[in-house]
Length: 158
Ligand SMILES: [Zn+2]
Image 1 (cartoon, rainbow, N blue to C red):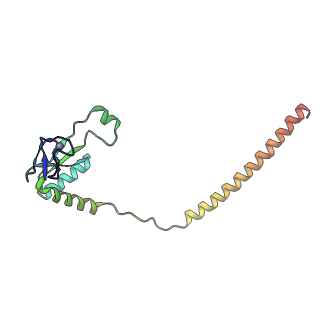
Image 2 (cartoon, protein in one colour; image 1 turned 45 degrees about the horizontal axis):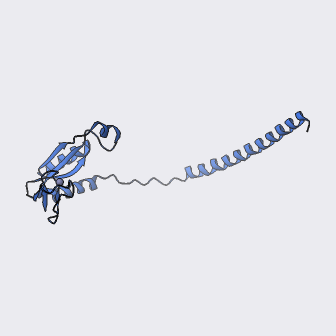
Image 3 (tube, rainbow, N blue to C red; image 1 turned 180 degrees about the horizontal axis):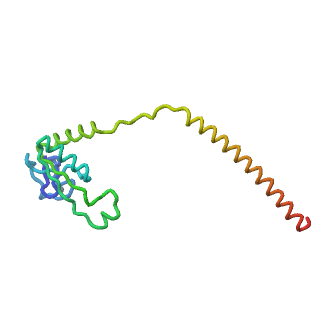
């Protein structure tokens, strides 16, 4: 694997330029101690993952992300509290596995809502009541319009 010293990403040895930043002179053979870009994290994730990596004695770095004012103002996915996480090259796979396991195990289970017939019955009742009400209203409107029309006709002597 090759390591880009400019943007701190790794790529396949066949590359002649960095697929990420398109530089060619910054590529060299990846070393175990190279700090490789891992992920961009929000404040909470950055904290949880740093704790997790510390527990597993994996060397990491969190860097602030320089953000322009327009980015932080108009792009809700980007926040000034975001951090870029870098992990030692030798531990990239290990870190990925630990983080995946952690997030998989803490993912909230999808709770099935208890079967309850009552709201459904209520819905049917209220929707048929609504239909009846609607028809009554239409009937009233038609009758009313009719009598207004008759009134106007009588005014003009049709
Ligand atoms: Zn690069």
